[in-house]
Length: 361
Length: 244
Image: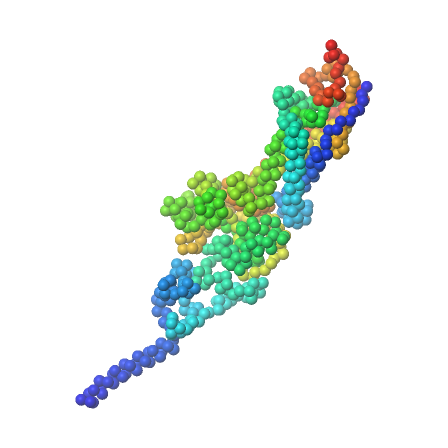
């Protein structure tokens, strides 16, 4: 009987040993990510739930899913999570430079190096590609450290209309050494529905409502060819239904770099204002997306040179002048020369008539 | 049979306004050209300098415009008399002056008009200055002030149709002012001597040559030529044949 009992105990002991061994293996490997699709499911089950984690640890799953980081998943950066997580232990965190070594090198040699780390500007769980972000959002990142009023005052010491420049240009246009630029246009509206109120970016929902439920790109791109002609821009700007909307533009670097610096050629204004028509040919119209990103649609070349209605609210002095207006201006000045030239010529030919009268008197 | 009389035609405030306006507009035209065509022109070196000089000259012209307006509108109270053509000007004066510039001048006839402190401008000048001083210059100044203060005056920029419209308006009106300037400077040389119209604008006094001789009509003046002189009464010469 005892022997039998002992025989029954052996498998139980082995099972317990196995469980303990398994637990030891688990402890050695760390926290289980769950292996779900995208490798992030287990993490997001808590970190996307406001009730489960603090605001600091909360991740917006919609924004995160759009990032490149979501494709490689949480374990790629947090490769070691203590088994006690979430009760205790902080997950390992990879250095951005491990993947982005070239950018880290650029950044390391810039005037920004040492001031803040990558996460100071970029939230890795929200980061977007340059094409998906608006110029205003870029400046929002900068203004989290650089107070806008202080920057306006500092720039105003040498820069005419510093407030306009700071509002209408991404900081990186002047403070990184990008080589090529495009004009990024976006739709703004008056605050609280006021036509002339403070301008702010029109949201996806507002534009969607205005588009009557259709895709918001169709507000401008009427023929749905994913390309916006100058005529479509004019129609958009002249449409009374859009009287509260305005198209603003920003001169944005085509390739974003991280070599932040103060460039002398930006200080003398010539970099932007004498750049001429070649640089200003390319423009995109940026539409907000449902998920917080932006979609840009190519605009016909030279759209920003249209005299009046193509881009009525965007003008870069010296660079975006309209050639037809130049011709009209020249014709007006030539008209003013008719009198001196034409009359002066006849005056010269008939000078003897007046000399004769003077002698008579 | 002629004698020279001096009349005080241009008081100091008007001369100050005129030369501030003149040099200001020339400076604005030069710097404005550089600002619009920076890739080809650089009269004043850097673009920033051109902007600064342009803005400063713009403010000086705006200030001089105020001098002009308040002097005529309040001190002299004759802004309308001087600048608005009267019925006679519209019916006959403009045509008469046009005929003078186009024909009689070449035949050696004297101008049908002579300025006085009360009637400073011939009918064509009145019409031209009415447009220049009441339309061109105010709108150029207004659009220029908007372009100088795009952010603070953002609401006005939007209300006037957007920055592109304001730039186009500013540019075309400025071209019109330059065109006027060319004509104005040329016509200023059409006096008895090329500088005779310029002197009053510098010294204030104009020398008027009084002819004590047979009236123009009796000299067999060309058909349609009717001299009208706006001399002060004390200076007016009434031909003998009109006394009767």
